[in-house]
Image (cartoon, rainbow, N blue to C red; front, top):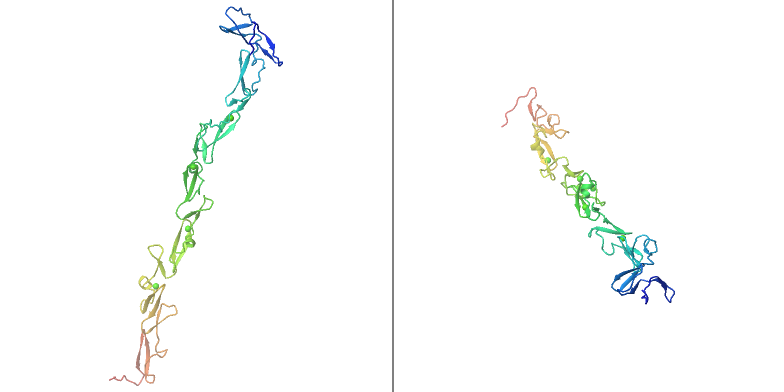
Length: 310
Ligand SMILES: [Ca+2]
Ligand SMILES: [Ca+2]
Ligand SMILES: [Ca+2]
Ligand SMILES: [Ca+2]
């Protein structure tokens, strides 16, 4: 600013060669102002001329993209559009990094702020979805939204903040992939699932079955194998008339009453023909042996009579 000794408007050239507009001069109320002058208080005036709207004629040096020029008497100032801030040079508009200076309104816990020219964007960390408000991050209910998050048949999905967990129904184990449920082979994994001596384990999806080897039957506990008492349960296990049944662990044995011998079938009792196998005690010289069921009898050969034993 240059203060003149005389009342006039115009430009002057400074000693360094710079040309500046004259702006003010101390004046008194007695001074008569020319049409190019305007009084701004009792003893100051501004020159209207040369009047230049730097903003209008693009003489300003404000940022061409995001700058806003405001014309002022004899000068102008620069400001910036929203999202930009004025550089120390008073002209350039620099993007405000809202993320860096925490001017963003993104979710403070699970939000991710991304700076952009003139603005910023909110997104969310994995497992969260951006709300309609563009700021809040809502947990994704993977169990509800994606029903195949866990094994669709035997899996149990549990939603948790930011993620979810899979587990499996009884009889299934979670795979290393964290999703799939694999049948537990109880017969291999738990060798004691069935009776270790006489049990037969059969693996089936989700569970297993115990059965027993021949001669044993499954206990009420579904696991233990108990010997079948074939003599009590099946009264016809041995020859019903002359057989003698003996129960044994896992099996049974048939024998026969005196005078009978066990058939090759192991059950039937056949009469022993004592006369034929010469196990009789008849007198071979004068007696006749007669085989009978379970026994035999001796009678006298022709010409002999039974003597009285005394
Ligand atoms: Ca920005
Ligand atoms: Ca979740
Ligand atoms: Ca199984
Ligand atoms: Ca038995």
